[in-house]
Image (tube, rainbow, N blue to C red):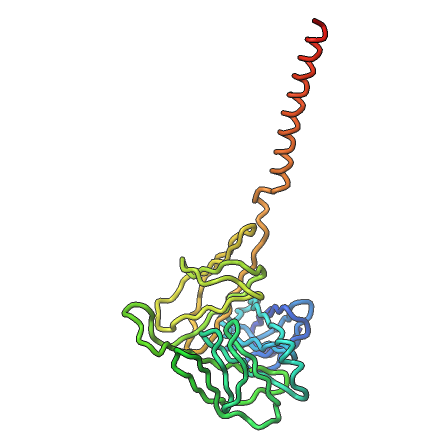
Length: 301
């Protein structure tokens, strides 16, 4: 347990859950401990005003999110985090003290450049760019694809050893869309995390895609009508429905979590097959007895 509480006033606790052992946890950039056995308990003064949480470990993409609730006196607030391993090709391609830029984009296949150097294409919404933490800083990044207006943004900082820094680019079509075809405005993201790949994700009643490699990135317009619920479902599992309590601001990613449990009430294919086989056996036995009776009767005559 990491104790950050003072001697005065009541105490509360954060229980910070993580899918990776020995990940370092920071509250408002203050180090409070490492996860063990899936969680870290942090004692804090009741009503403390921590705003953000950061979880990181070498070789994994850093998790950052806002803290929407502070524990009251004697209250426990659970916070769920998940960090994903960085691609093996990224880790092995560069040696020494290294960090990563994670460039997020709404268009698959868009090419990413740092100061004019090609760093790869957007795949599943992101591309990882390795950098030496002690190297010459990049000044700007550019994301482009044919048919879209090129996006250029500044690189404000360089990640430290083992850290990641998120950058965002939104590409708009070069042609003017027909009225009502799209919604304008700044863009944010929801990242839906789930334990079952292939599960379908709906926001309110709108299909947004399927879970791949444990998550789905959903783009939203920050000036649009807020969604209220999200549902994750797949055949053979009990659907999960959760409340969307916070809308992302421009360039922000808000994490949502869904855990699907096996639907024990679903009919078993084994049981159905067994019943069908039993029925066939009964019919076969009955027909055999009838044939045998007819044969005996004829023999007696």
